[in-house]
Image 1 (cartoon, each protein chain N blue to C red):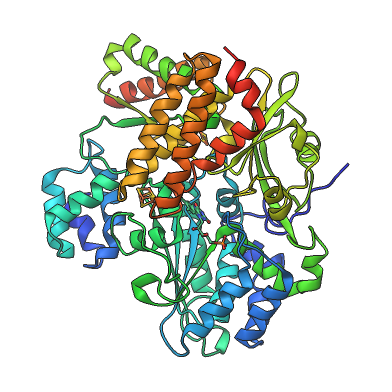
Image 2: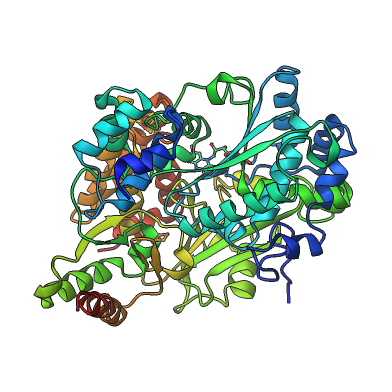
Amino acid sequence: MDVTTILKKYPKRRDSVIEILHEIQNHDPQNYLSEESLKKVATHINLPLAQIYGIVGYYSMLSLNPRKKFVIQVCKSPICGMLGSQSIYDAVKVKISARPDSANLFTIEKVECLGQCNQSPCMMINKEIYGNLTPQKIESIIEEIVISEQNAQK
Amino acid sequence: MIQEKRIALRNSGLINPESIDEYIQCGGYQAFAKALTMSPSDISEIIIDSGLRGRGGAGFPTGTKEKSTAQTCIECLKYIVCNADEGEPGTFKDRIIMETDPHNLIEGMLIAAWSVGASVGYIYVRGEYHLSIERLNIAIKQAEKKGFIGENILNTDFSFTLEVKPGAGSYLCGEELTLIESLEGKRGYPRIKPPFPAQKGLWDHPTLINNVETLANFAPIILYGADWYKSFGTSKSPGTKIFCLSGDVKRPGYYEVDMGITLIDLINEFGGGVNGNSIKSILIGGAAGTFASINHLNLPLDFDSLKEQGLTLGSGAVVVMNETRDLLEMLTSILDFFKHESCGKCIPCRLGTAQILNITERIQEMEPKERESTFINIIQQAEIMAKTSLCPLGQSPILPLKSLWVNFANELINKF
Ligand SMILES: Cc1cc2nc3c(=O)[nH]c(=O)nc-3n(C[C@H](O)[C@H](O)[C@H](O)COP(=O)(O)O)c2cc1C
Ligand code: SF4
Ligand code: FES
């Protein structure tokens, strides 16, 4: 869905801004908010562009940088940290670099508590939660995504 | 064997959360229908009498807040907001309520809205809780169709609209006035208190704001009465509490039990005991929480018993650490969290959270003597920060810091 179509769904009110920004980002092939999109948002809700930037810059789920199709967010908060989130993060990095053909698929980030500490260590890939992780599980989770992407290309 | 007592979670796992009919079959929306036959002030009196205290962390008497919101003005526009931002590390109870029984939350909000005279409601859910948002949206549509939300509800003159609003990854937006700023579509910068939301909240209108778990108790209290509710828990912290157990336990998870259960019973009876040889410490209340030691294992978990010991119940997060865990590392991770979540609006917290993290990261390499003076120094800094910060986030790092020092000074100084 393009930005103009998304904007049409929302009232021209400031308090819709976070929902609007989420939806635009989710529909962007690069999972981010471009200047071009933000200008349209600013016009729609009648706020200066600088203020829209101020909002995007404040909220950690909103990104001004282009990202890959799959955004892997590994929780680094105290509980996941204690139960090995660093080794999960490392395993993700290793796995991705071992599959150079997949480098264009993934962006890795560290985030704060995802509210899933009953299954720490955990991570979120786009909207999907993965819990009770081990480096072995990372191997198969990433592999599965890569293969399904390759199949989709065929 | 101690049993779970499920009030807020009474339907959790037993019904299909996407079916309003199943909720209604379990007695759903009866409490709301009953509430509509009562006067609004009678409802806040029952909630006051039940002794229900806020489950968002502060433990403020819920009925008192309702009454004061109701009385701020008569016949004026009021809002009700549910705080579902749940960002405190170690806490996931609100998510379970929203994912497994969204109608229970909606019914609680309807009752609360009627009692304070609010005609518009918002549920502010943290952006990462995709399933919660999805289920709440389904549930709201169903409730509208059945006529529980809308104009002239159940043939009364009560009208109410309800909407889900997502957050976007800010812990601070869980603080009530910051949440209101965020709902208005702004950066999450806190407002100065007072005025409180009950006087001047969303768009400067009186606003009742409550945590998910708090509201999840409304329907049962209205159906069964204050005395019934008070038969659970302790005299000063009545009812049940959903504890979130995590860390080194065999069965991490959420358990709704009487307030006042002892720490050791929670860990052993429900958590299946420690994962490892022994318990070293228990972090209670999350990052803005406190480190307890094995001397506290027989302490009842309720607002006041913990406070007497310099500890805090907070959101009900209970993180168990076994004998192998490095408490300094845990503290560093907590301080890193606060540094990340500080909004930067005021200098003591913006600089202070970075500074105490920097110093703490260096403690590992210090000699015992230097460690001691360093700890005393960062505690002093955190105390100054607490006194001079604009909002409660800057007042939080002192909690884990001080409790860790009080209970584990020996280990912190001598362990290499
Ligand atoms: C930094 C900070 C974060 C908070 N996060 C939450 C939260 O995620 N959920 C919540 O219910 N209360 C949170 N609170 C507490 C709220 O400010 C407020 O006390 C609560 O929503 C009141 O509801 P209750 O009386 O039902 O507990 C937070 C407070 C602070 C200072
Ligand atoms: S105390 Fe921290 S979080 Fe609160 S206003 Fe100041 S900088 Fe922001
Ligand atoms: S600490 Fe990682 S999900 Fe809570």
